[in-house]
Length: 384
Image (cartoon, rainbow, N blue to C red):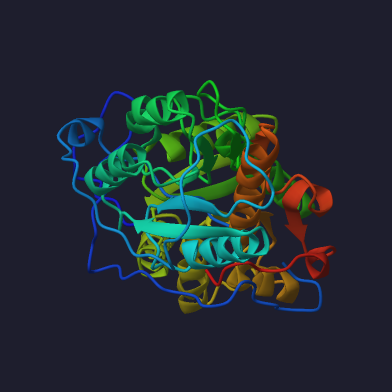
């Protein structure tokens, strides 16, 4: 996942600036799905970047392209025979979460007489802002798939694109100030394909309460792993989580840490939690953090005694749930996001029909709640 610097200034919406941190190298993935068991089937998501940084962006851009062919069309709809050229703006291509998303998007484009030109922002909000400017002014693209680093700062450009007749689909991250809905927050958006952060928090909280009650733990002392505590994404997820666990007064968050979407950082954070809280019963966080937590728990000889709950439905998570090492997980599906986003854009371009809000986990078993009882019905779409 993208790396973000928690030391950069916090903006009014709680979001922080994105940076490329070489100490946390991203990982690439060349496959669409990673079967763990027959019929097995992600995170969260990248965090937002700084609006003040975006305001200083130039109009220069960098891109990597699978190919770039076909003419432009900015009409409300196009014939099925016309080749479509689509700009695909990724926050960072070279990481294990985005690679399957892009691969799925390219496959759908190929099947629908369309070509994706990929613009890799490499975690830089300035670069992405400039890339979107250039895409709009070039007149070369029928539509845009946007995975925003800092959604609120890109809204004026998205509105400009829509006013020019370019169809835009938002994907994976929030394009707007509201983190409790998948409904489009920009008028005229062709579709909004994303997970709802507050729903992740609610599902995590409910699962933690269930896990504590299953072990008759009262109190149930919880260690909560943020990814980046001050980010708007984490504020939304943790807020919903806290509301969910409030239904059981015995469930108490007694320790906190940050994983920065890194197993290494997760390991360190959980080590600190366990050292400071000998009576810790459960640890919850995104899959990468829990991967580190597995190591920390094992080093303390507490495997099987400390409950682990994650979110992401990565290969690591599904394997952990299947073995019983993890209690459960909340699913995400990056490849499904890529597929659904291109399908929605092609439909908008061919038929003039906007798709509204599209939840990529809506059709999953048990609304994407992964347990040992149903894990065989899921397939990992990213490694973790």
